[in-house]
Length: 281
Image (cartoon, rainbow, N blue to C red; front, side, top):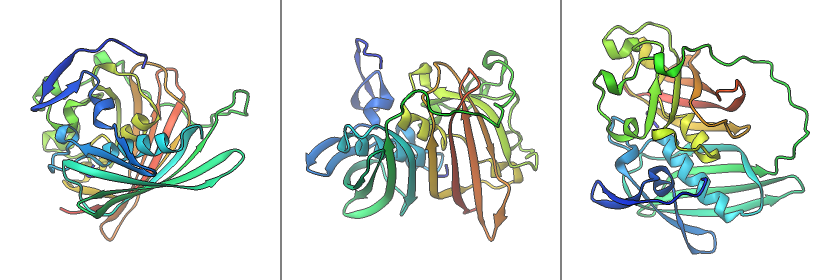
């Protein structure tokens, strides 16, 4: 919304809760409590500036839980989530259903609830990814300076709170909305990665499609909330920073689309998304 390699881990306390050093894995985990039902805890570590858990974070947690229920169906290919009401940090439950088991593609759904009320509904497709299938790329990765030569929001005073403490960003320059001078162009190019360069899985790719500030902020808008988000997950990225292209082209009666492309450091498209969002300013 508004918008492993196995390693030995230490344990530490973060915000009064015992977690592993792999905050992303911990915060998107869930446990089975009955057939088709899973329990999870949403944390404020992924909050937006509005004080609510980020929509991409919700999608990652739901997708990981649903994948565990369709074990053996392959990797997630497409995930489409509708947000029903604002989430809160705290306990939640995921109800899952396998809709169809096909020869090549499996379809399943999940509904996230808190206190018996629906928060988000997800439909996802899963499949194996055999090598050798036809692959052609007709687009181009964003042209960006090397990440170490880019603007670091945290080094320039942005507080590492909520999602801005969990995802690292590098931009060619400070965005206009952050300096009080919106550019008028609702688009953005940037590098991003999970904090510390943590290896990215498919749910994390889905998260990164909705982890940065909405580009409509460059036309003077301050609050945009996602209504529906669809993510296509093409391949896992090479280790390192992920180049990100965001843009909005249509704003109609307070609703707007937002398109996102994620490219790895080898110039391969790894994920793309489109969302419908509503302005609340």
